[in-house]
Length: 164
Image (cartoon, rainbow, N blue to C red):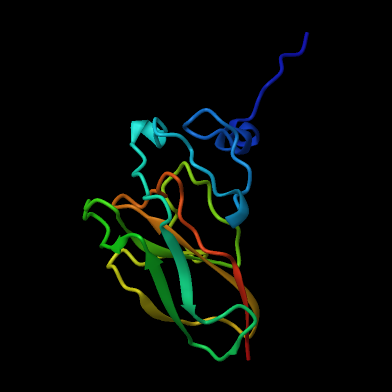
């Protein structure tokens, strides 16, 4: 009788789809931004920082549909909360992350740091981002002092720009 072997590499993607809160996560959109529950914890029991009702994160510039040149001048907005650098655990605060040409990461895990997920843990609200010519999507995601999305998560609408 043959023994079945399961590759952890094959199973891992489906395991990651189950959040630390025990619910499957759908790809979030601004229209499905819903609370994850007050008792929701991140991985290894990291508590999710609550976000105040009505708080919003958004791009001040550029606007969706803009044609820009590289480096692209970006300015981020935040209402109902204050910007604080990573490591600073002030109530009702967080710092910006830009998601470039990608969907939002899993909202139950710390925000990855790579070419698609740009961190502004120093508390900046402006930057110049070098992008190749062509069409790009950008989205803001606010992270708490540990780079975890808030509960409920705060993210902007995804904007589309064209770099000349």
